Image: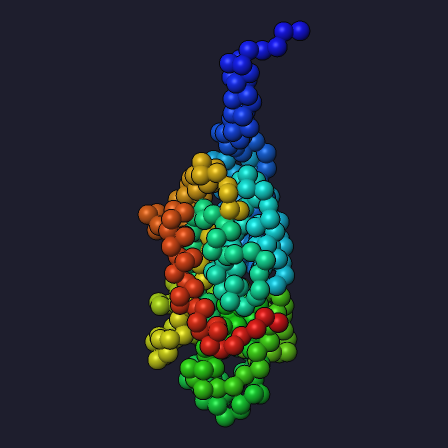
Amino acid sequence: MKRPHRRQFLHLAAAAAVLPAMSRSARAQSYPSRPITMIVPFPAGGATDVIARIMAERMRGPLGQPIIIENIGGADGSVGVGRTARARPDGYTICLGIDGTFVLNAAFYSLPYDVLNDFVPISPLATGPTVLVGRKTMPAKDLSELIAWLKAHPNEASIGMNTLGFRLSALRFQKQTATQLNIIPYRAAGSVVGDLVAGQIDLAIGTLTTHLPLLRAGSENAYAVQAETRSALAPDIPTFIEMGWPALTYTIWYGLFAPRGTPRNIIGKLNAAAVEALGDPAVQSRLVELGYKAFPRDQQTPEALAALQRADPEKWWPLIKAFGIKAE
């Protein structure tokens, strides 16, 4: 058997070295060739899950593959986000999270991943207001009456919430109004609602999406939304700003992320699918029905989500540390 000449050998070695890169490139070019998993780091039925299902269904068309929702709750969303961080960066595992999971949790938990550096932003999706509500039998009928009642009854009222972002809101409410409440953390929004309607807790902070049906049914009282303007879905609920508490504004944002190392062209395809979905009037209408607003078209970019994610720590992490909040 003749041995190859040195030049032939070098050509063969170079070709062999190029094959893996060509293979990766080919896979990226043909992406997606199978279903994509979208991790939702909260239990099914909550606001994040609802938005994920709306987006997954509409993104299916431009991607040509179904998107399967996988709900992985626990530790305020950090379990599901951790699963995303450990996933192969091939575009087949993405995560739909919120500011709490991709910013705030880093100040509450000792995480096995870096929220700012272990993920690649795909696109910001929507923002939505949060609302302070009370059980139907609360004696206070508006925010001013509520604050007066809480001051007259320190540590008698309980307030429930299911994310650390809402817990931060509750602590800020206490500090700003000089009131004292028993703060009770929950794993799921449904549990908060159930206990509030049953009278097991007195107050709650949550998304307008979660509480609006009960407010419309008269099963809860609304005191104020934390947005800068009133919601078109609930125009009778005043803002904290109107009621003289501008420091108590807080708006949740939702965004899509992939594991660090996901190829840029795959991120581009996922972003294009998300942008097409958000541009669909039916999707926009559905989001509005739920109390959400899609980000403007010029902000639906990976760069815009990265900027948003990196700006929030400067705002919230010092407050979290000042309050000395610990995860429970």
